[in-house]
Image (cartoon, rainbow, N blue to C red; front, side, top):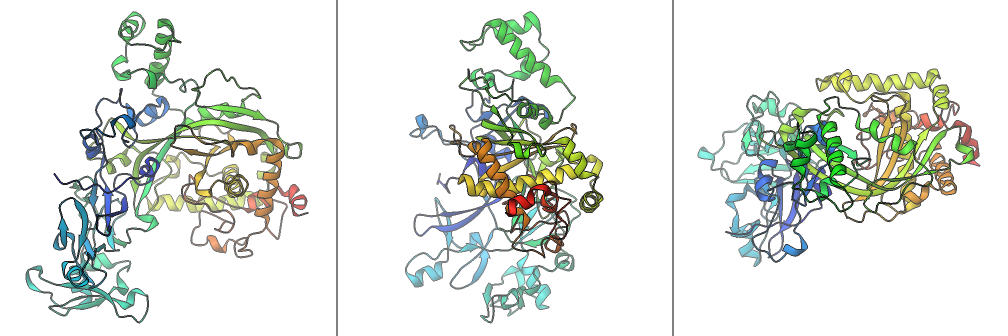
Length: 616
């Protein structure tokens, strides 16, 4: 059987480009043709990724808190070929991809046709134009066309080129679908109006100027068919009309991810050391549980009694139906950290060291911690197209990843380091009493409720609460990340935020800023080092100094740049916004004036007392 291997991608990328996402590759031994594929659904993973027994699979991930929240038995990282099996031809785990879009275009003769109409060779996933290749003397690879159709419910299909040509040209096309289509430019400009689709036989011709028209598909009578090529089926009864979108557009795929830090006592590596089927142990206690565990080879450092105790604690936790906010369980690990944490375990997945808050900032910052080591488990639960997903976890999202519910979801494990700090609550209470703060918060809250209503969601259903403290902490996190990228040498896109504010614990008023990698060794400590008091003090001053003035002021400070994104107030790409990999909330719920006030009134910023000092 021909091997249509395309290439390798990072594990972490598959969480952001999971089932249903379009990934571009260069393939082919003779010139490297362009191939676009949709990552296959999880139903295909179980076979192609060689998922057998998760309790002995090195790609399996166990995180009890996430397992309980998402009601899953385990999670799976994308497969990797182990060093000791590189030469084993029978062991080739992979993730399957489905070619999409099917329509392709020749860059020389502009011929537009489906991929099976172009030349191919067994084992080579690329396609080429026979006529142009013969003329040139080497393969002329065709490329995927850059327009597809998608709907807000996640379905996607090829753009209806022939129906579009018939409607826009006002002519009847060739009989029996025998049109010979060409997609070419008249050379007058780079605008879509100068690009034309035409048929060489019936002479129908139409400009692409209206290809992004709002009601195009309604005019074409083209309603969504519910197509899910990454799964291989069609959902019936989708009420949406399709929209034209480019395969590389940022809104063609929004991964919905739920994550958790591995914290005590779940950092103890029982799941890694013991091949335990936790579901099979549910309901067992005392002697019955001890007998079931007696056949398991336990770690040398653990007695039979300790093993039973550890397992009972995990079973009790997983059977508790009351799901707490995951961040509420994580927060005390940072705020209650000590200056000398125990270092008796080399396998410890979370190491937090308390730092002294610089004296100048003690009325603003209540706690500062150096996170020397952390482990984050990130799980994809679904995705959306066209419109970003709401922050709330919804089990219905999972239907976009597989045809039927599974016992697992795809995951990525990140090891890294970071800085945690929380804000001084008495100062926060005094600050948010200012009517200006209340008014600006209300502006974002009203816009957010309207945003949710468009998606048929209610504000009370969401885990997220829009409060002055949340907007302040979130904005502060963005300012710190931008400054950290300068001070630590890390790329901005590799630094992430984890906001602890509100939810089921109103007392949470902090943020973790961290970086990580899928490598087993984690990172090198350059980010965590900046939590040391003298370095942190300089970091805060630099971040505030950058926040006072924006290159886009006064347009930015007056909120004009946020008109199209009304879930922000004073925020733009020149001052606050981050790469999409860094922000948990898709660059929404930001207001720089909450930190340092506005050019007209510096007094209502939380750090306003420091602005004169920073400017000097």
